[in-house]
Amino acid sequence: MAGKAGAARGGNKALVDGFERLALVFVFAATIAVFGYLRPESFFTWSNFAAILGSQSVIVVTALGLIIPLTAGDYDLSIANNLTFAATLLAVLNVNHQLPVGFAIAAALAAGAAIGVVNAFFVLYFRMNSLIVTMGVGTFMHGLTLWLGDQQTISGVSDGLVNAVIVNRLLGVPLGFYYAFGLCAILWYYLTYTAAGRRLLFVGRGREVARLSGVAVDRVRLGGFVCSGLLGAIAGVLYVGTTGAADPSSGLSFLLPAFAAAFLGATSISPGRFNPWGTIISVYFLVTGITGLSILGISNYVQDLFYGGALVIAVTLSQIVRGREERLA
Image (tube, rainbow, N blue to C red; front, side):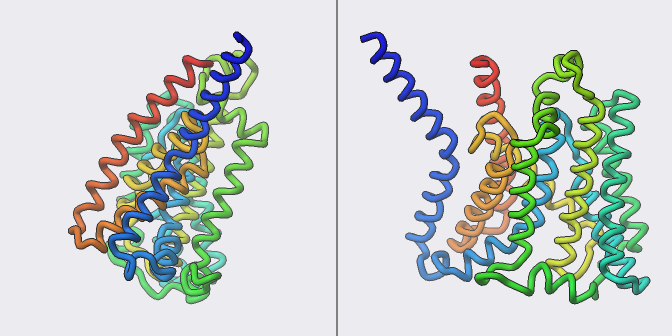
């Protein structure tokens, strides 16, 4: 009898755990069903879904960049300014100086990684709080971006980049979606199946314990900041490819959605842990809700309400889930 009771409890726990992992997926599906029922002629069309999928690659990559330092217990508030600086640098080199777009992209990516190094230097060498450092570096980069671009939107970027991101499509969906999806898969493999990814998670769970276990904590955190900077620059490249231009203030609008998706994603797929698949599902859940409300005629201010409310709720839920996981551990 005791064995049967234990088996029943184990089965119930597995069922609850499975539901928790997929709860956001179920809510996502229900959201699609509700809006599809209310506005089938405009919402339930492939062109609408293709637009949703193809329009969010920049936010997806930005959110993926955030979860790397978040996994190690650090914040990177500079990633949106990094995105904008990389986009502006690319546009200035390609449009103003007529350099090949490939060279301009490489320079933008190198700049993004360098910004990550700067963040890590101040955080790790001077033992400063990552929130303060990345906020300051981000603000500095915003000023540098305005200077570099002369406070003007720079348009006329090479058609090759625009074609590769937004014009060319597969199954009606812009290729930018597939780039973001591929980066998500790579990051998932890195965090799940590599020793470096496991060390990143170990550091985030407890730096002192990790240090006493022989993990080079500062090196792991350095790698997290550099990867975040690099992904921020990749997001900047995708942004230029999506719009064909670089706006020196545009990247700031991606920070809140990216954080909301990162924390909401930590409540799904691998609850209590920042994870790529939960993050990408969160991005499309949030934009689907906003798109559906817009189709229903709700004013544009709903976007700020949606993202702001989602961030508060997501942080609360992720803290609850993480606290429970730590108690069970």
